[in-house]
Length: 324
Picture 1 (cartoon, one colour):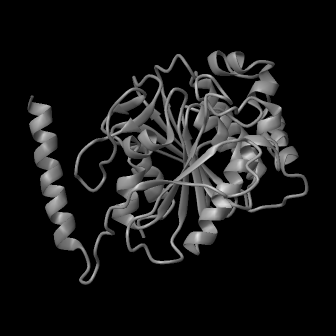
Picture 2 (picture 1 turned 45 degrees about the vertical axis):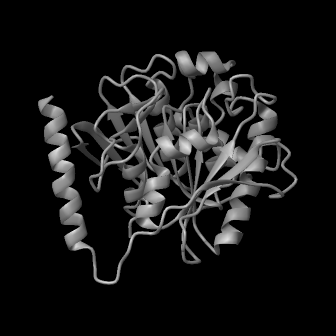
């Protein structure tokens, strides 16, 4: 009871302060609706495209592509994850790819299927076509990709197969690119992890986009320490993979806490962030949320959408500069 009252009061104070500090002439974008879009390309992966565009959004604003997890759907994930409210708050559009039961009985994106994770093929190509469509419609130049669980696995796919498209990627309880192939099975990958060196992990990404010399997307990872569906070893593997791709070592340059949770940052030779991790102590399988009206709060709790007093979408968006 005390915690609830304290958080409510803190949120109200923060909201008032944020309103008082808002620059003159600045207004939050009006709420829009999630709509389905058809005719976005050849759609070889047979996915569905949904998008959220705040009313009155000016041209040139960024695009975020947000991928739901297994047993979820695009519209519910869009609302629960916090991405739609942040789009209203900061002014950007969001694409929500939707999986179908015809492709996967549990509505998981097929991050483990060779035909769906290669450049120009299957679900990866469909998501890329959705991104290109929204960038064209929004007049935007920057796109970001993120996802939960199977959507997190597909996030790593998009970062590897289309690195020229995505400035950054955010993985919540997800897996490194090529993990199922490295482990010999998606389930071994999920429940144990794959045995690869950083160079071997990096080679899998480089092979997805032959001849590409960069820049590569920066990576943000959120992982619960009590996750038994996607073991925390996968976060370590993601860091090994993407630090190697960025040409840096696997030692964190800075370590601190955010929201009371361990946070680590890995920088490249130029000092830019190559990867960062949020280790959510005691959290099971899901996406971190912090429901409320405070400036750092977002999301709506539900199955696999977990209130841990830290909103992953907010931390990603802030790190990527979407609030600027």
